[in-house]
Length: 208
Image 1 (cartoon, one colour):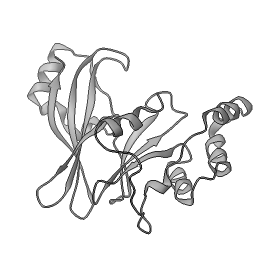
Image 2 (cartoon, rainbow, N blue to C red; image 1 turned 30 degrees about the horizontal axis):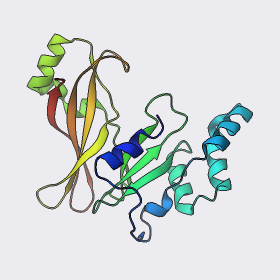
Image 3 (cartoon, helix red, strand yellow; image 1 turned 60 degrees about the horizontal axis):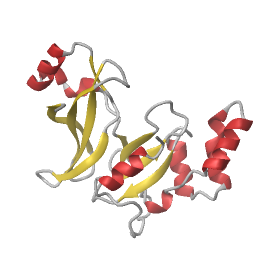
Image 4 (cartoon, rainbow, N blue to C red; image 1 turned 90 degrees about the vertical axis):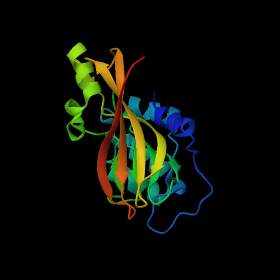
C-alpha cells in the first residue's frame, strides 16, 4: 500500500502539513507532493523504462524546487508525501512508488545528516544479545528481522536534550508474508545538535 507511512504518521499523532514556516535550507511542508495516480498509471503504460516517470510528473505537476531536490537526493526514485515538525529533527513520509515492497518509509530530516531513513540493518542492534530475542530465535530458528519500521510511534526527549524516534520492526517467521513472531522496538537517537547517534534496541516484544 503506497499510503502506509502516511497513515502511520497520522495514527501516531504526527499530523501532516502543520502550519509552520520553512526555515531557509530546511525541509518543510511546502516540499511535500502528491502523486497523480491516473497520470502515473498512464506513464507506466507508455514507457518501458519507468524510472523517468516520477521526475517528469513532478516537473509537470508543479512540484516545488525543494520537492525536486528531495527527489534527486532519493536517486530519483521517491518523493516526500508527508511532513511533521517535531523539534530539532523532524519526520517525513517518503514514497517510493516503484518498489515491490515497502513503498513508504519514514525519514528523520533536518538533522545531521539531513536525511536519515528508518530502514536499518539488524546487525547494528546486536539482537542475539537480547534474552527475549534469543528465546524467540531458539523456538523459531527461521526468525527474520524486517528492516522497515512502523512509526514513529513516539518521539521521546532524551537526557541532554536529544530526541529518540521510536519504531517497531517486525520479527517474521522466515519470510515477508509469514507469521509475525514479535517486534523489535528501536529508538533512532539524535543528539541536541541534531547529529544522528544511531539505532538503539529498547525492547523485544514477542507476539501475544
